Image 1 (cartoon, rainbow, N blue to C red):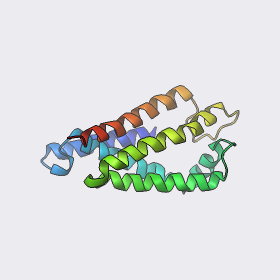
Image 2 (cartoon, rainbow, N blue to C red):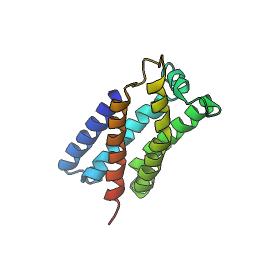
Image 3 (cartoon, one colour):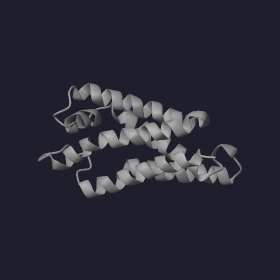
Image 4 (tube, one colour):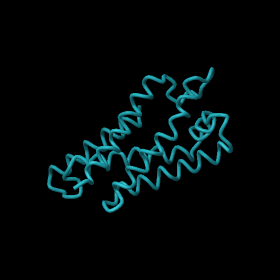
Amino acid sequence: MIVLVTLVLGTLGARSVGWLGVAYVDSWPAAVAVGLAAMFALTGVAHFVNPLRRDMIAIVPPALPAPGLLVTVTGALELIGAAGLLYPPTRVAAAVCLFVLMLVMFPANVHAARMPNPPKSMTTRLDLRTAEQILYLGAAFVIGLGGVQ
């Protein structure tokens, strides 16, 4: 839930600043980019901090090799993507890359939902996680559309 709240509050806060005249966030796509960057900064850091790191490693599907390395790499990609969202020349590319990353990582959430004893910190109801994922993908899509002139 904190991830969703970070996206929403980050976006609304950024857009409010834009309404006050700050050109950097003078559009919804720019404000969404700030909200999504905040969200990915939060989740990216979580990939490196226990107990969340341990829980993320636990939900990596067993068919994939080196779960610890995968969590490290995806965390680094999330942090790089968050930075890319904040720099206007790379914003659209970062949004597209994060969109793809979210699609690639979604099977771990499906696996977590099907685990008999999933980590408590992971959202285990697949319907809720899927709805959240659609919202996050939509945010990345809005940013991508904002870059189309």
